[in-house]
Length: 415
Image (cartoon, rainbow, N blue to C red; front, side, top):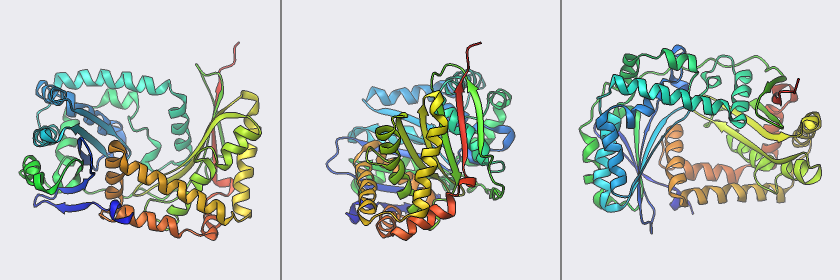
């Protein structure tokens, strides 16, 4: 299994990191470009500029729109997204169109032509997008949690920014952000699926001649020292249930405790056999679904538990969740349960690498975090090595009740 979790890695003379992961047999090929410039790297008064710039890659000029639509002429798919630490653009194409697709993707990312008129058009589109996000309680409740867990780290700012900051962004600020961040030394190219080293050189032609001023310097966010507020309750219109999100700060992706925390996430909320699912849904029927996640990056980490419950079951649900967390801290899990959650996680990794759209995201994340072609293989080995005492130690270090914040959205009561 290990050999299937390693990709080939090379760095071009201009500093661009290229990752090759053939998946045979596959009928299509995926080309993904990642830029190490997400919402966590923005200046505070420019919140949302990374996401705004992502919109402009495909829609920022008539030529960009023409190029992005050209992909569909050959049956391909083009997609972009912005995250905390990166902007990613991906093309999914047939192998015979690989070279042309690479040329288009290169031009979209490295091209410097942007239209001020299209800038204003995209601003309106983004404001509509932010309004849609505002209507989604499952997204907003996690944003509320992060606002209370983090005061100094930029992760407390939404990925898309705020309407007030998006409205104030200037066209030249976007042009400058592109010039500084969209340089080969600050970017990755992932080729996966029906690709091979035989056509690699031709595929890379559109990327070799790109130049930049070097990767930008990044400031390290200050460490959060204060305890979070234990409970924050807000009312939200348009919902009929109460949305509950509980979380605690943890550690970054490279920390030695991360594998244990990832396993705890699976143990508590990973699937129908998880502790919280069987307790909250099957035993007490207080929720339809419950999930937990350990989210982490280069300089942050947090654990969250999410569910929607009947308005009069919130206190009971919180108590049940804290009861399960206390069990982790006070009582060792069994060898059988540890092995089960390891198998769930390892199965998820393998399925992800078999999935053309999950595969490049996994490779991109691992490279961003660890800069090592063996990063996923090493991670799997660390998961396998986690012990029962590692689980309990991590629970005791990070899951004390006063480390948790509970964010709650209540429906607005009728007057």
